[in-house]
Length: 188
Image 1 (cartoon, one colour):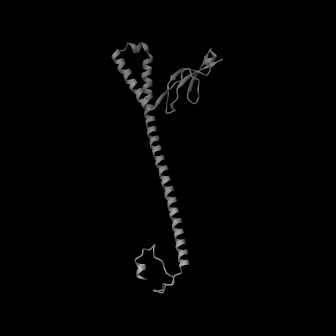
Image 2 (image 1 turned 45 degrees about the vertical axis):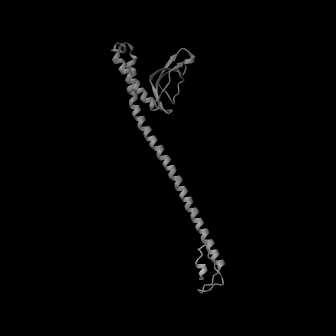
Image 3 (image 1 turned 30 degrees about the horizontal axis):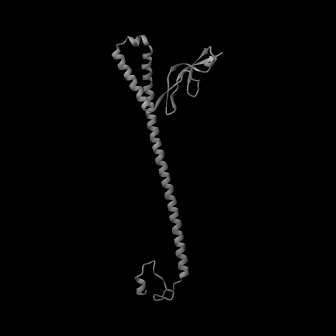
């Protein structure tokens, strides 16, 4: 190869068809076709690898999102179980408060301490997204309420209304975790 061509980079090398110093008879058009074919094949492979990489990246992002949601669900489920164990304790406090005569006969300091413990438990539930289902006087909804008794009422406006709440119901983020047990009015 002439010295001047050796100093050029690979991209700059231009083959002269008349150059036959090494006995090579270059057919530029067939070489060019082969190079174009190889280039096209490389571009297709590159696109295939890029598409595969993008799919893998999207799959990984989706997997990561599902994993985070799963962790949140597990945490929520665990806290829900603990909350369901705390709610009966609150019921017991409230049952004790209902008996006014006995409750008021207890030493005032002791009573205030018990009321503070009750308030702390209620606040723990609130901080964890637990809300009481307001039922008294509301329209009976079988999706939310559990009817334990039907009570005859004299006023038509009390028909299918909740007359008494026997056990409070609770929900977390709109999901009922304990249905309230209620008495429902029936007008005849």
